[in-house]
Amino acid sequence: MKKTTSKKQIEKEYVLERLIEVAEKCLSDEYFNPSAANRALELLGKHLSMFKDKPELTNAENIAEELRLRLEKFNNE
Image (tube, rainbow, N blue to C red; front, side, top):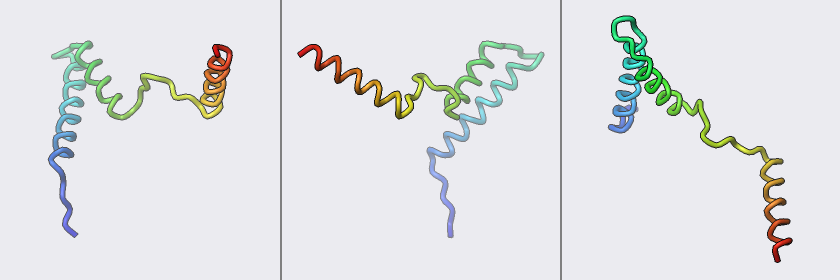
């Protein structure tokens, strides 16, 4: 079976490799730049879904929120 690699996959791998290089280089004594290193690490972390912009609600929290909205709507009618 022939394995094919898409252009998108190659581009994604390239970008991730460069971000790792930037982070490592910016943390070295020779090119120390904590802001650039932090940004590269942040982008890597986002790619790995390590950070959530919005907290995920549990099923119970979703139900509670839905009930609260329905009660609010009912009370406003």
